[in-house]
Image 1 (cartoon, one colour):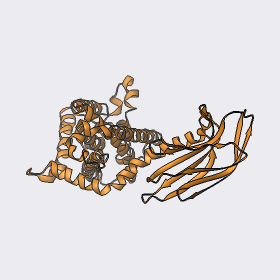
Image 2 (image 1 turned 180 degrees about the vertical axis):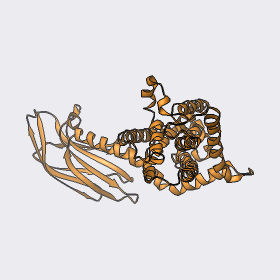
Image 3 (image 1 turned 90 degrees about the vertical axis):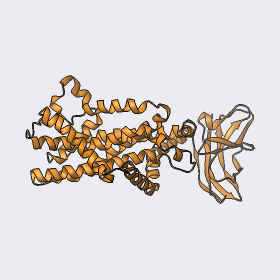
Image 4 (image 1 turned 120 degrees about the horizontal axis):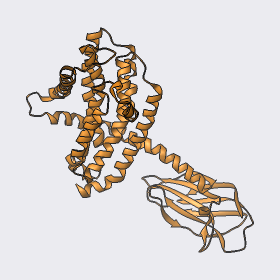
Length: 396
């Protein structure tokens, strides 16, 4: 059997969609065949209307009433056999009309074309992949002022009432880096081959520590983020997906302070900054994507696993020592080097040291793989958070 639609035209008038065209059928046996339509609500995929039937004829005119409720709808005009099947589900051609009803109740015909379900599935897959990346970015951009306000409040609120005030935002990363330097640089006498001096160790250590500080701060606080902002979650209009983003931005503020210290030390010790520092914004892209994806994942999971914060602290410590920050890559045993080199923070730390200390461009192949991985993690983390967010209000 073969069914093919010919010339198709469509009009939308007074809330009624009218489609006219021609239909050529070959090998269709005698039976209870009709032309009918199904109307679907696009966001939910719900069948809204199972429309009237018309006899299958070479020339046809079909009508479908459009709902008055605002939304996006699709109308499938297809050959069907009563109590047997709708043949668009069997791979046959059908007419697809896309309609959008505005908030004021005015319908508009977006498109009308002949297609098949295979084409529809391919288009939906491509659209889903596009939305998976654009929706979180659009949400962040749309709420950028709110994020800015919440980050400012978070940073000032953490140190409110203390003697040092907001100065602790600088002192905390400084003291943490100083502690690791004393342990590894002074007590353990760690050195780097490229520059075995103590100043050289300071620079190589800071170059690895700065991106780690931003990542670990956001990932470490993520499991409790939803619990700490439970009042926001119960507000129906609050965009809760930006709460984990606040941690990412707060971590970047810490990194900015740490980077200021590093660049100052680099200029003081070596007398200049390499031109390759222009690559730093490029390195921030995969770093932000990775941190956002993990932070979304942990923030959502923390609602269901209250012990996650303790487990996460241990895992971050393990991750830190799996990243060559306090030691050189050459010190990793051969059997473990292959495993460690797949660590995204390993690749990121190596790139930071290349552009800051070695005057080299980053390894483009490794950075490209990291960019791909970070994009997938960003999309997956947001999808995970979006899927679970409906349960937050009931569990918090």
